[in-house]
Length: 113
Figure 1 (cartoon, rainbow, N blue to C red):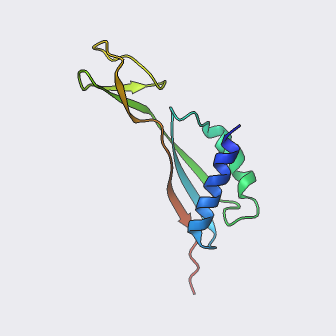
Figure 2: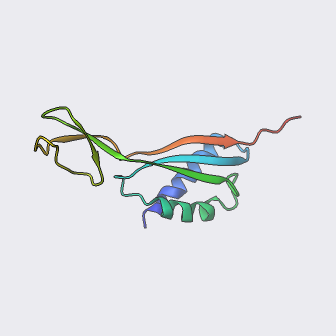
Figure 3: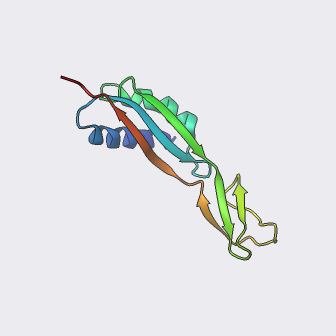
């Protein structure tokens, strides 16, 4: 399960950017063609966040659908798999979206004094 290593890296990156402040929420974008299982990331997140500034943080995952552009006719084609066939019959497709793995937002607790 490579999701454990990915989640450990996400926690490390968020921790670095939080500068010691408590993290309340993390929003990830995961492409449906990325071969990363959002449920596995959710499962690993709480375990990886234990003992860090992310402990108790809410994890939100936005799944990005696959989209490609045909090199032949320029049509945009939704994809469920990393390959497909355009309506014009071409298999020469350039992926536009679907392979993302991004930390989109981090919500950090601010302490007012």
